[in-house]
Structure formats: structure tokens, C-alpha cells
Length: 571
Image (cartoon, rainbow, N blue to C red):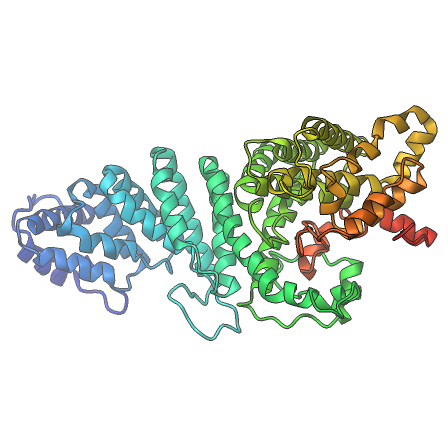
């Protein structure tokens, strides 16, 4: 009956054990007993006797299932248990059996695994009381992986056999998919266990990589969990990303001798040997191989973020030509962006996920721009959210090469109309002394700065428009904005003020230098070291995905560089 590897017991010995335990089997002397029926009767009687206090046969089942069995023995045991599932109770009497079942050894044949998965599905579906403990165990199995070679400290999830890892994960996903189909409400019970099983951010990258890969696979057959799974994954990634900025980037970039050329030396490098996550190497990447990489280990946040970003970007790539999947994933990413990414401080790389998927379809880019504008203008939102939206809008319009020219012009016009409307409404009610009510106007000042920045960066386009339609010059009315008592230039960054002043003067649309000179005599009210999104990507492997869609230099920077025209810093 046991079928234990390394020494099967003789049939006569098996029958002696069985007849001592169960004495009421019906025996037809003229017909040989069916071994499967005998084992089923043995299991059912043992389970019933355990409820009555007789655990002798029950312990023999525990002992057999706890041992290393031959595949045929697994099939016999789990077939018998499947036919006896109605006798298994969810209380204390049979909890030991359930725990042994959940510690199943996946290093066996596909047929044995099939028998096990069929039984476990029947067990879970027989009564809802088995659902939590089974889902918890299955979620834990999704963490099992082959550890990296440089990881010195082993964990309970380490398995040094890729084939065994794949076999286990395939079986777990089959069980979860079947259970979620038969019990739709199981998704609600499953998600907390997925959250609890998520690897700690200090663990090596291999822990995060295999678990996130399994969560993305789960999202494919459980679309009702997609939003929450993406939010969970991206939320953890945001924490790692912010840690990079605080511990690795900000201190170096803020050094007095740091310059743009240092970015190449700051590029983080990861092991590109994993074909499942490594994108095709571009000529640019190959040329950068001689750049000394930033020293990191497999447990460092830069390494982990780079590999996880690659994995998610490649997952998005698979959806590029599947509209039925790409559209809902984009919608989910926007919702996750709104809830998780937008409020975060110093989140440098994760926002590129939405940047990337927007390049798949023009409607995605238009939808994201519309979302940013609506959030920036929404009075219900906090100033923090509105300010962040305006900054994302400025950087996105300047760095995304796939955005249509008409979309950029529409966004600028919308911003300009909003700023004029705001000035007209608040001009008379503004405090006489500038700066007294800065906090309540924080969103306006950020939106105005975005508008000034876009005007200066797309100065050439505006020059062409004005030459074609001179009457457009009256539409801008910048003097009404900069000379208002709200005084937005006082709260803008010096670089943006200089760019705007240069563009305004060169196009003959006004002169804001008198206002700038007056502001220089007032206290500085700019935000110290503001963080702008979509700055150059510092993760070497991740940046290969953005070679054709990201403009590292703004349009005006490229124009000035080509023409050797310096900014007019003073009149």
C-alpha cells in the first residue's frame, strides 16, 4: 500500500497491516479484491476512526505520505484520498494530514503531479474551510526559485534544479487557475496571501524576480486580480526605486563637481546573462561596455530594480500586438500610477513603465496626457498631486519622441488658457504683498512653470506659427501673467525663468526682465532641489528599451546646441 521507494513491502505483509487495521472489509472469495478499492476503504476507515479517537491507521497514512514515494504510489494514495475527500474534516483531527499533503514533493512524474493536483482541487472545493490554508501554501510555493551563485545565505525557498522549479510552478498555477474558475470568490481570499508572501526588499534579486514573474502569470488567467497585482508589484518596486535615489543617486548628483558627463559613470550595470530578461543588445549598449559600472551586488536596489524593470517591460512587450490584453493593462497601469507612483517622492525609474506602454498606441499617449491635465486642474486633488502632475506633464511632453506635435500644442494652449483664467479670477483678491498666500497657489505656480517651460522648449514651433499667423501674438498675452500680483516668475526655477525670458524676447512677445530684476531683490521662494520625472535613465539594461522613444535633450537644448546660441541670462 505504501509504495515507499527503497524497499517495497510484500503483498502478504501489506495485507497483514491492512487486516489488523480494518476488520470489516467485505471479501468475495470468488473474486479478487480490487487494490484501489481496498486502499480507498482503508483510507476512509482510517479517517473515520481518527474522529473516534483511534489514530493507528491514520498515522500509517501520515507516515507513508511523509516518505519519498514512487510515482505509482503517489497516484494510488492521492486517488484513494480523492475518493475519500468527503470524509476529511477541516478541523483539528485531520489538520496533520492536510499539512503533510501541502508539503508534497514535486520531484516526481507528471502523472503523479496530475493525481495530486486533482485531489487538491477537490479538497479545496469540498468545503470552504480548506481554502485559506491551501491558498497560503500555494502562494508560498510561488517563491521557490534557483538562487543566484553569489548568494551566500540559503533560504527555505532555494531549489537547485530549474526543471523542478518549473514543474512546481506549473502545477501551482494549474491548481490556482482551476480553483479560481470553480470558486470565483477565491480571488478575494488569495490576494492577502500573495501580499504576505512577497519577498522582503532586502532579499536578493532572484527572490523578487521569480515571484513577480509568477504574479504576472497569475494576472493573465485572473484578470479580476490584475489591478491589485500590478499595484502590489509596482508598489514594491517604487520602494526600491526611492531607496536608489536616496542612497545612491541624490548624494552623487548633488556633489559640487558633478556634471552631465558623470551620468555615464553613474550608469548601473547588471548581469545580462539571463536570456529570459535580457533584451537584445543595441549598438549603443555595446559601445558602453567599457564604461566602469557602478559597483553593486545582487542584493543592491539598483541591481534589483534594473532586472525587475526589464522583466515588466518585456511583459508589456508581449502585449504590444494584443489589443484585447494591452488596453486593459494600460488602464490598470494608469490607475496604479495614480495611486502608487504619482504620490511617491524621488521615484526615478518606475514611471518609465507608463512612458513605455504609451508608446504602443497614440491613443494611450493622448489618454495619459488627458489624465495629467485633468489631475493638474482638479481642485479636489491635493496641491502635492497637482504639482506632481504638472511636472510629469512638462517632462513627458519634452522627452517622449512619439507624442504628436498637435498634442503638444493642444496641451500648451490648455495650460495657457488655465493660467490666464486663474490670473483673472485671483488678481483682485490676491494679497497686496506678494508671497503671503503662496501655499494656496502652489498648484497654479507649478502649472505656470510648466507652461513657461513648454513655451521655451518649443520656441521654434511657436516662431513658425507666429510667422504664418501674426495675429497669434495677441493670444499669448504673457505680460498679463508675469506682471500680475501673483508674480509666478518668482516661484519658478532660475533655469526655466532664463529660458522663458530668452524665448519671449527673441520672439518679440514681451520683456519680463524688469520683473526678474525686482524678484532678485526679494527673498528666494523657490522649492529647494525639486524632483522632475523622466530624467535620463541610469539603469544600463533598462535604458535599452527607450533608445528610439526617449529624447535625452529637450527640443530647445538641441536647437541651441546646433546653433551655438547661449541663453540670455540678463538683458
